[in-house]
Amino acid sequence: MDDVPEDAAPVLPTTADGELIPTVVCDGVDIVYRVNGTGAGRGTATAALNRILRREKAEKAAGVRKVHAVKKVSFVAYKGEAIGLIGTNGSGKSTLLKAVAGLLPVENGKIYTHGQPSLLGVNAALMGDLTGERNVFLGGLAMGMSREEVKARYQDIVDFSGINEKGDFITLPMRTYSSGMGARLRFSIAAAKDHDVLLIDEALATGDRSFQRRSEERIRELRKSAGTVFLVSHNNKSIRDTCDRVLWLERGELRMDGPTEQVLEAYEAFTGGADKPKAKAKPKPKA
Ligand SMILES: Nc1ncnc2c1ncn2[C@@H]1O[C@H](COP(=O)(O)OP(=O)(O)OP(=O)(O)O)[C@@H](O)[C@H]1O
Image 1: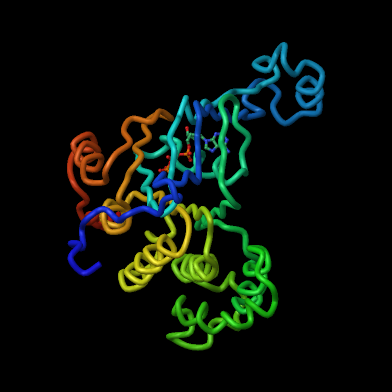
Image 2: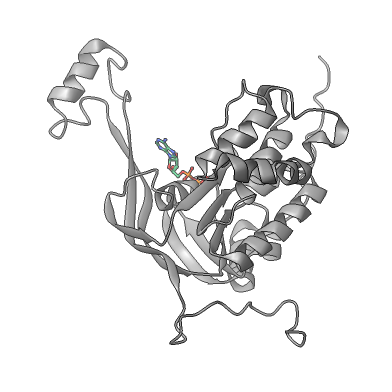
C-alpha cells in the first residue's frame, strides 16, 4: 500500500472474521528462582543432605533463598507484532523471555504459545570448539531445518553474518571469535528460519552499526513473513526502529504496555533521559 506513511503502525494479520491472531498469552505469571547454598555450611555434604530431607519445611535453614523475578505479569501478543521488552537491570526481562521460550517453569499463572518459540540470546548454546561452519549446521539442525535446507541457506547465513568479510574466519573454531562476531553468527543462524515466535535477547546490541541495521531489516522481514518478535534491549533506538509495542518491566512487575513512543517516553523520564552515547571511562592516572 503506497499511501501508508512509513511510521504508521503496521496492519496486523487477522482471521477471516477480522480478529487478531494471538501467538503468546501470559496470564498472571510469577517466576521464582531458588538459590541454593546461601546459608551456613554451604557446599558441604551435610547442607546438601539437609536440602533433600527438609525441602519444604526448612528451605531457609538449608540455605535456600527465593528470588521473585517476575510478578503477576499478563499480556497477549498477536501475530505480526514486534514487541520490545525494556526495564532497568534485573527487572526480569530475560527471565520472562526464557519462560515464554519454555525454558523456565512458572510458579503461578500460565503461558500459552502458538507454535514453537525460539529464544535467541547472546549466550545461545553453540559449541565453541567447533568451527563457525559446523555451528551453522548445528544451529540449523537444532532449529528443525533439514541438512539440505541448511546447505541451501549456508552461504546466505555466512554472508549475512559478515564473518568472512575480513578473512576466512568461518573455518576457525567459534571460541576464537570476538563477542560481536559470535553474536552476529548466532543472529544470522536464527534469522535464517521463519519463526512463529522469535525471542531476541540483546542480540543487536553486540554487533556494529551496519550489522545492527541489517538485523533490524531482517526482524521486519521476519515479522512480515510469519509470527511475533520479542526484542529485549537497553538500546532505545533499536527498540524505536523495530518495535511498535513495548512492555516495560520494573522489579518484575509490568509497569506499562503500549505503543513504543508512549512507553519509551515514560521510561526515559523514569531513567533520567533518552539514550546518550556512553561516556568513555577516563584512564586511571598511573601511580
Ligand atoms: N539463575 C538465577 N538464579 C537466581 N536469580 C536469578 C537468576 N537469573 C536472574 N536472577 C534474578 O532475577 C531477577 C531478574 O533478572 P533478569 O536477568 O531476568 O533481569 P533483566 O531485566 O534481564 O536484567 P538485565 O537488564 O540486567 O539483563 C534479578 O533479581 C536477578 O538477580
